[in-house]
Length: 506
Image (cartoon, rainbow, N blue to C red; front, side, top):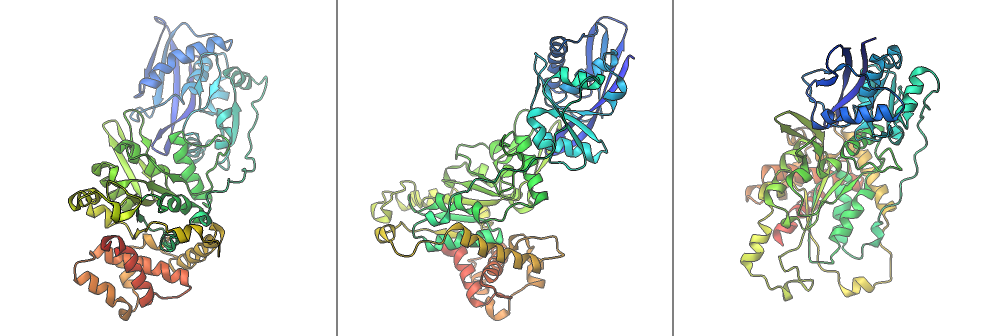
């Protein structure tokens, strides 16, 4: 047999496509020709595969070897094709039955000693194989738990190339990996740790109930970071589909925890203010990787010291926040990542960031204006809630009376509010109030005209944009859901307007 075929999977973003790996042996000067738009990593895999085959006890054929990766027009990236290349070469040389190789999808990187090493993106790769109708995949043992999350496909865990060869020859079967119970998620920070700040606590609760973006401003020590870190704990656990989406993103990014193959809780991403555009949104010079915004899909993206981020980097968030996805284009192709995350910005009121407040501030009005102007108006217009946090007083810090509400109590109210919103939005494909389009909101779920007088007056004075008007209505519906009301009244609309204009007034 001089021709053999097997299968692997190539990735573009979080979407996979099955790749046909064909190997032909012919007479001529010994060498390897690799075709099908391979990148540098795939081209270098020939040397890894040759060493792995020899060190695993096999024989490398001294013939002209032509390896084709189809579809030929699709760029092939990464080291996950190594295992498929090795088995296809052995099958073409007759070392293993070609029929057994042709029934498998093989994913994995080979070490020079023949070990099969874990790779990124196994979950979306196995999902693609299942959609294409394949029944069995061979993956590295380190990725077996992740691959077993896909229903309806047999997962075989491989530790070495020798084990794969023995399985193909029928001498010893690879162990079938089944999905094991997931370990309980560790508890996150508790909202009961936040001292004082009733307005901040209220804003975080509203943000969690409606999926709204949040901007927290205040002096150092006011609790901005503490409140942001406790927001994911108020969000409901991810359902099966959402968990697979988030896990696929972290699998491609290489940030999936080894002891927890499935992400079941909303994630929290907090990049440093020196992060580049590629680190925040995604990209890179090699394979396109998801950025912090994409890794925060269904969770929270927290940008502390937001004015310290380059303004151009922050403005790249505007379109993804509206669409819920980001497409990164390169000359060789494009990749689309979901990024429906909640954005939380935090900022000090001025560059000196004096904990004593305005009394000890050394910044001139011009410096304060320049500092706050680093956040563009179009970006802030997309933030539903803007809260100015005062410094925590000594009385609040030393108070030993009623303990603040813990996360469990607030999360229960958030769950009830989200259930009410889901019942109202059923049949629209929407889940939370922040996703409702403005036109649908005004035509189908507009509050009574008497409740809108205050927000209409703000629109007439130019304090609100039309986008801001719609966002106030969305927040008003969230406040109504938290209060157990069927329609927002003047109080909910007034509070929603105050939560949006508070930072501007401050």
